[in-house]
Image 1 (cartoon, helix red, strand yellow):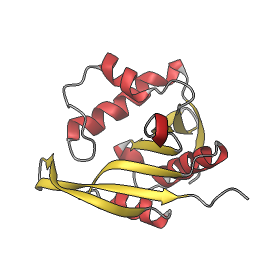
Image 2 (image 1 turned 120 degrees about the horizontal axis):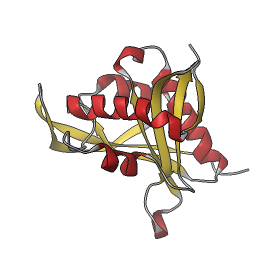
Image 3 (image 1 turned 180 degrees about the vertical axis):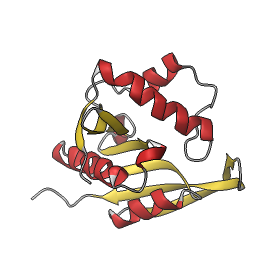
Image 4 (image 1 turned 90 degrees about the vertical axis):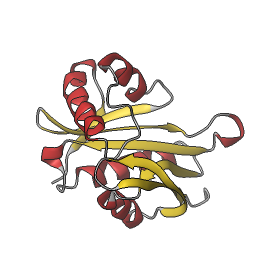
Length: 167
């Protein structure tokens, strides 16, 4: 399946919040407080320009969401970052791959030198495999830095994709 990916609209937030809440409540893939209130989640998830938050849809149904922007300000501003969440009901259908490709294309078009993911839970093997397929490498792992509800303390990977220099 190829979902439509577009910038988030105010009307999308209830569906996006449902996904964000579902993901953070599971405590398996994001280092967000599971008690995070909706207002805080919206402030954290919806990027202000020049960053961007998008939704992946199939008709009116929101299947997933991504946010992207600059990883660090100042001397690190040439590197982008992104985060992705997919509804449990839509996983395994290519939504995460489509969102990842969209974010990488977005960053390349804006002249970033690469994209860095700061905290990919190592036990999230489907995400790690997706990012590797898209060219990302694990450049380091912070051991035992994420408290997983099933696996206990697992590592967080830093993953990076360097873009080709501009022609």
